[in-house]
Length: 120
Image (cartoon, rainbow, N blue to C red; front, side, top):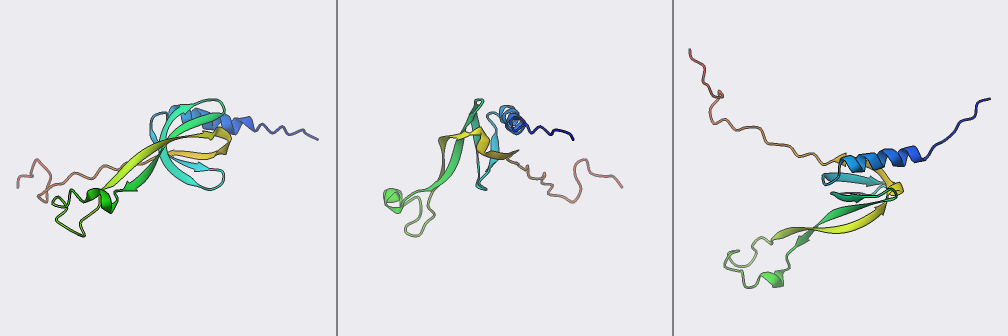
């Protein structure tokens, strides 16, 4: 009979190392309760980590009354803002951590062949 030892600190240690590696990067976080959000990891301790969590904010209609000429009257687009709120989470509540992917658009070639053009 072999005795199996369960070390539950290895999971939190690997998440702690991942958080340290992705410090000040825009990441997606998945918590143990199934919720997920994106944010910027700002600080990591042994038991807690601090994240700047982004939230979208739309400008109210009453705030843009003076700017109607910029929006061409009624029914114009409302401005959208993104603000970040600092929140602390326990490290044990973190289930997964991944970098937020940013894709660069492919280069635009106005002609069918990229430069230098082939000579025939």
